[in-house]
Image (cartoon, rainbow, N blue to C red; front, side, top):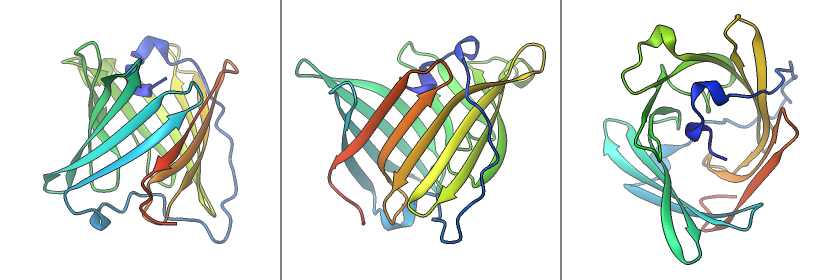
Length: 195
């Protein structure tokens, strides 16, 4: 389940927990300077789908990140995003044609607590969904906890992810647990960009 496919009303829940970072914590940013103009990574997920992530340089530190899935031999684009040089998503194109903006970005590679707003198409920022993300670096990646502010201003949990990264900050494995108890995992099957 891709986060960008969810519309603001769908954000269901995750618990923000204050976690102490270990002494030898990893830098959680994507090291995009280690990539020339394009990088392709292949993953398999807990549903048995093959997922391909393609990162293509757009210039000025921006990258297009496109994900495809193979269903019954057909390749389908599931997510197309614009990221900054650290790997934070600025904009995503939904499968339904919606354009989702993250203001200032989706905080996925920011250490510590970070707030952002998700807006769909031309929606004014003040009507967007406000989210809080906490990324706690670990020795081999980070733990991400995501919650959103409900209509009454109460912070509602959405998901918790344990992410393992290689030396360049690219995902090796991610295990997500949603507040409703559903789980989803994906792991890299090739190629590698580091250890």
